Length: 86
Image 1 (spheres, rainbow, N blue to C red):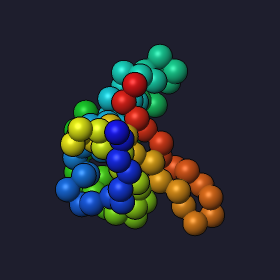
Image 2 (cartoon, rainbow, N blue to C red; image 1 turned 90 degrees about the horizontal axis):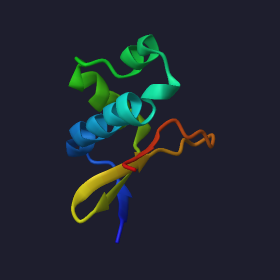
Image 3 (tube, rainbow, N blue to C red; image 1 turned 135 degrees about the horizontal axis):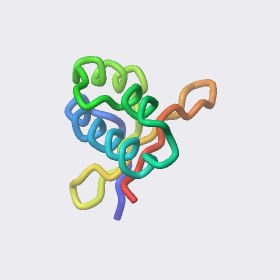
């Protein structure tokens, strides 16, 4: 069963890998290489990502103890991130 819980600081790295994989592999054919590199560069400052996740406060989906997705819902109704492993 998938369990949904609030973001915790130690989720940041797993969420980065999920985001990176989605941009590069899942949606790679939908964007130019320049867009892919701008959104999910090979080398990225994890502190910047951690701060972004802290600001977003996403919900994290776990299955069998592994992060399988995350999404956020802002107070104005905006969903900025919605990423799940296929």
